[in-house]
Image (cartoon, rainbow, N blue to C red; front, side, top):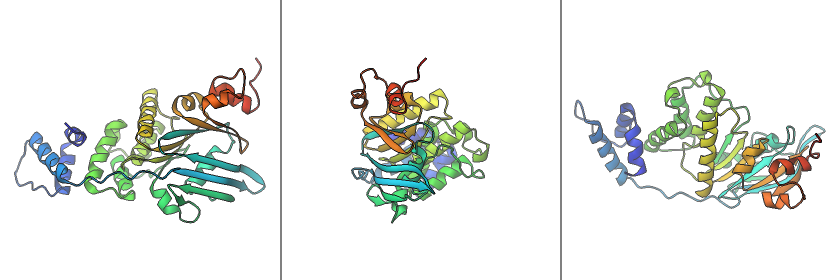
Length: 303
């Protein structure tokens, strides 16, 4: 059984009917056996041309000499950062280090004071829309359209990303199952808990096909242990499939288990960068990311 048929087996009757309509399958019988309808839809899907996935540019994220000032305050100073396809980079630092500002500049929400930002080769200062089309962003404090239901929101995101109607139905069912949203699919966004809102926003980002360029600000915060485990496993799989992922966090255990290399910031400056082994070589007694982080941002507190 291929992946599409597997998804079809999990669809509701209404979803299967919608798939049949989208594929122009005539439904002339007053009733039809579910398995027969699944087989007919699967047969039509096999006939549809599957486009090859376009690989990302390398680097997928490129920030050069970026500085961001808010009046006299320098939030980020001369930042250089690259994320290549097939890697997860951790942007770590204490509160106020400049991590969120960096992600807001990267995603085109605010403009840098100086420097350049490119996403998949697109200049986010001159022509941000093409870059935004390929970028998935989860902010530290997730917000969404409270008057939309979860299914409506996922359909809206599919239209934003230009996903075909057939693939929209497939991907919505896939993401609902992946993020355990079946119970909430007809609930209004405004009624969701923080954790369920986070899962709905993640499902919206993954409604299109990979590879992805992702910028996540504290993505684990608000998720329960199972949800956090599932997200970390998903990100590791997407990395192997060629996605480029930038994760900002001050939860160092998450960063150490997830990321290939790190950029450590403090007061807007980069104070360390590299793999864990490279950073460990800077200090005789620092072996964990937590110890390295503390050494680079003021020293390990004395007990």
